[in-house]
Length: 268
Image 1 (cartoon, rainbow, N blue to C red):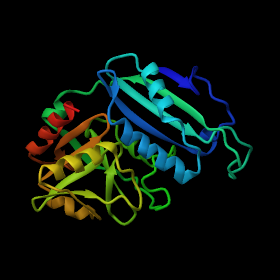
Image 2: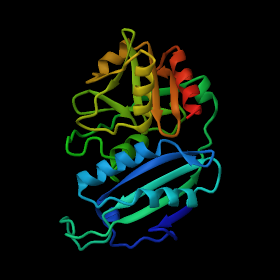
Image 3: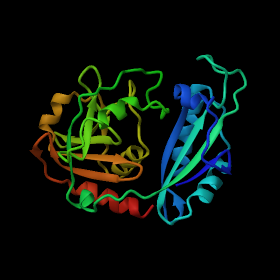
């Protein structure tokens, strides 16, 4: 892994950084394909939205793009951007004039089995739930403890991803992916105005599907409705789309629209 902190090649962070103490920051995970970050403008737009909501000064996006290029030296890899409020005095109150810390880390491409795209993945329920908080909904902030606890629930190979609900039994997302369900012939995805993060690949599929004449409905999705879903699939910035072949022990057919979307994505 190659790491740049404020543009310098190093892997040590000031122990007073508010990102460590309070999760006071935002991040993005970007696929780098053929040496180019995929959908960088959308990632920077979301990063800017999160930073603005938290009151963190915006980074220079041209500089970030140059640092991604400098850090990601392989044709295919993963770039992670982290922007914290920086070093501050003890206590929750943010410093009046923060000096943000900017981190760009490059990692190898994950070693996923190709069958996840062609044959689908197994999805189950997580016990850990999201807490609803409209003030933080949609912000990709550094506190991911709900997902950490949910992902710790299985390590036995029984499933590939876990689906999470909120405290009202509403489906929100998988631990690291957005979810789409075909219900009564209509692709549906959870509304994310109370919690969760609207992923970049979710945005890409919403646009692609609308352009294809099949708009997706985003709404409150009660968990009980998934019993009638005929197909499911997951999206995130790295995987594109994984069809779900099994959900909570129930076999599901794969929808050809998922393969067509991945073919479109490969051309972007």
